Image 1 (cartoon, rainbow, N blue to C red):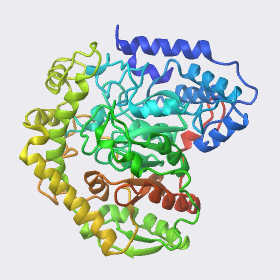
Image 2 (image 1 turned 60 degrees about the vertical axis):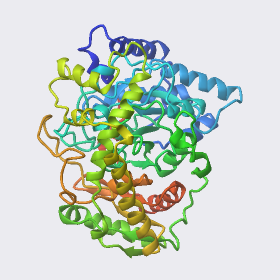
Image 3 (image 1 turned 180 degrees about the vertical axis):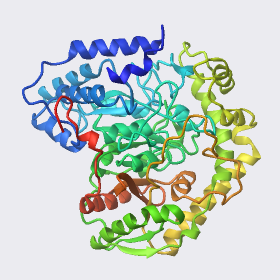
Image 4 (image 1 turned 90 degrees about the vertical axis):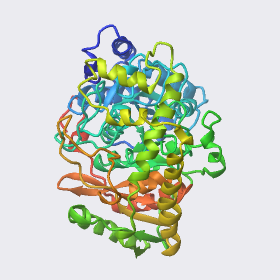
Length: 542
């Protein structure tokens, strides 16, 4: 299987054994070829759900089709690290439930891939590092648990930037375990932030939907440059228990898929309070029925604040954004211009927050890993990565900076950074603009088209460079991350063959509103253009 080629150099490890087991399981459990196999490419999750319910296909057929696509098409992209060894067994169990009239809901039998920082029983959680190659969880993360309880097929693990991109400031595309990821629209370009494998897999129809995580743009960036829909929910609407952390202050797990409805269907399942993540205490009181909220008339009469791109990004994405705004107006929205100068760069506060949180939150996660994991702290991780030849070629200035912090969340500098960060991005930022301009949400381009890949080790400022405020352009994505507010990216078309998204942003707990606005826009714009390679049917000419 192409998807396991990245493990051929590992000898005597849990990953190698699991890869072999998965290959055997897929081979032995594969059903006989159907005369008219179910074609999953570009099929929305909602369509697959309907087809499973009507009997037009089975979960085994659909799951086998996704596995076949991964085998045939993932090689140049490195989007998928591992297929679950029991994926087809899970699918067969779903089919048996449906045959007995005991389907668990709309996601029963629907295959979903997870970024490789989510714990899922039966597969290692490596976060892209050989330091965690023996990290075989005995309990699912809460996100996986909820989806498994809803009957979803836990299909496998998507590639990720190592430790969700939080290792060093130099260029480091992908991970040591999964290799470098490549954009499906142009393999010479980046698949963006750390949920890159999830973005690739969603764009390529390697699963009905995927899960990513975001701390400072790692769902929105990959969704934008891979031409898919992605939502970073309000902090702690979705549990982070069982996910390798950067910062519980800013971490969120969220769905990535090819349509807004599909994202809403997944969010309906994963949102809610989890006693294992005390930060989620208010989630149940603030969650909604996200699919029910979708309406094709959501934009009618709504006032939206427009923040236009500036500088080089404005020149590149401005015409496409103008076209997207015309769609919003045609659907009945009233647009209010908000000067881009209102944006604030919160990276100085974010640097303090993430450096302190990473040490505290990672140490807590590692303390709960199985005894087979010898790395039990950030200090251990640094030592392992300095001495292991599979890891030592990469610098780790962010880890070293985090290890040097003291006091964790009780450090006065940290507490001041959290207070200031939340205030300038929330109370004095997004919340103030919503009230001052009397708008329900803000819209802006999600970013620039995918950049050219740089060789690993290329010097760069990194995600939280120690720079004065304003050194780099301010970003609404970063502001939403620090505020802890929801943000949703939806495809708005191509620039020179490369996708760019439009982002919808509002205050805390407004996921239903954002999804409904984006749903109306998506249906009117029909702006998503899949990568040509995603339209390939393995074994048949496109």
